[in-house]
Length: 237
Image (tube, rainbow, N blue to C red):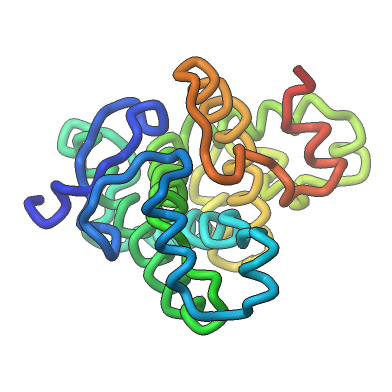
């Protein structure tokens, strides 16, 4: 456990102030708002000068969705040493460590591929990605139940059998059937990851940040779903 103790995870994202900062490539704690250190960090990146000058940052969502998808697949494959549900022998901290490993790997891959184009994630952006991955994975059961509940309440989904569009099955009473579909259908898995992230942002991150009077670099924008899925999943308030 000691190798994970320094990663700072925002308490409003996972419900507890766990510290595992060494999951990320750097060890310095950072806030999730803009800072002079981030400005300097971005200025030192070599890449496309026109893109850098525009100030437009890359979306954090693809990296986050990939990590959540990997976690779903690992759970479906019942990989040894990974924990996704609290039990008599598994504590929440162990689930956080499992979730953090997926966040760390996804961020490391993203940073390696992004150094040449100047779109390397800033420390704040890394922290947001990590917080979201851990927040979703630690709430898999709750978010998946909410997803199925929301989808089941929409008539056209049943009528046109559009369950897979949301990464769900019509009947999810048996976890085994869900696991098989996740393993066999990559698109189903990604769709499920997207919807779980959207629900997390809408029901956990946005209200929690508002209550704490905080912001994150991308303002928790849900811009990775089509209109139909947004109307089903995201509150209109």
